[in-house]
Amino acid sequence: MFTQDRKKIQNKFIFSLTLTSLILVAEVIGGLISGSLALLSDAAHVLMDVFALALSFVALRIALRPVDDRHSFGWQRSEVIAAFVNGASLFVIAIGIWIEAVKRFSDPVEIKSTEMLIIAVIGLVVNLVVAWILGGEGHDHTHADEHDHDHAHLTTRNQKGNLNVHSAFLHVLGDAISSLGVIAAALIIRFTGAVWVDPLISILIGVIIFVSAFRVLRRSLHILLEGVPEGLSVKAIKERITSIEMVKEVHDLHIWNLGSEQISLSAHVILKDQDQQRHSEALSALKQLLEEEFHIRHTTIQFEEQPCLDGHGGCN
Image (cartoon, rainbow, N blue to C red):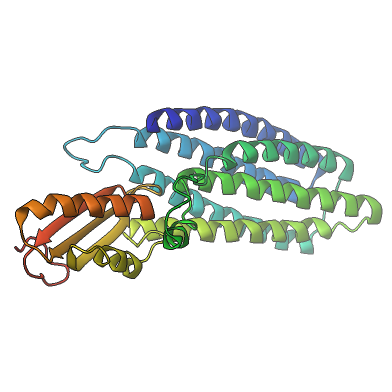
């Protein structure tokens, strides 16, 4: 099912990539004809949308590769790396737009508002369609186990879905907002002749792009640095594990993301009853708790008779 879902997402990426490429051509031509920096800035953003979609598509394909001798966890991190690159590219776009906008303030050019408006409206429609296509895939819509403990909802409701898809979605959504800015600039210029609005809107577009970039980079870096997944708490999970009657103590607890959606956990556990037959029962209870309440399915649990020093595994 996981592979089938990924293939559906890939098909959506191909369709989105085709639409975005067409609007890129239209905006470049329209920007050159109208002389609008805002429209050309939007076209630059669309160019990076094409790059982001293509990169995300390739990352999705790589992530589907099976585990091998050199990659025991598989290739899921490729999507996080793609998201990081997409975020970095957004930063570059924003800075470039700001530099060009400052130049336009000191040396304004004639703007053909009608052509600018038509292209911007077309771009907005296409971007909204692509954002709608990708938006449903970038977030976790799992509503199962709604009867679980309230604590489970507090720790899982803020988790986001596939970061790779989400970064591409932000590219496209940001461009849709940019198109709205271009439309507003075209209308103001048409009725007032205030050409300075064009570079001003460009600066605002740059701010939107910059904020989107910061969010994607922050989350991707957090994953690459093995940070605790968003919405989860080591303290809270440790408390829930020790709430199981058989468990005496838990230590050396680590939680991290393999990819943006796959969470892993490892822990050393001391049981109250050291009978080996109880280990299987305890392991089953722990795995069930972690999966149902925290959606953690990849777990490594080691039973011990005495605590190890934090960060040192393997003692008995």
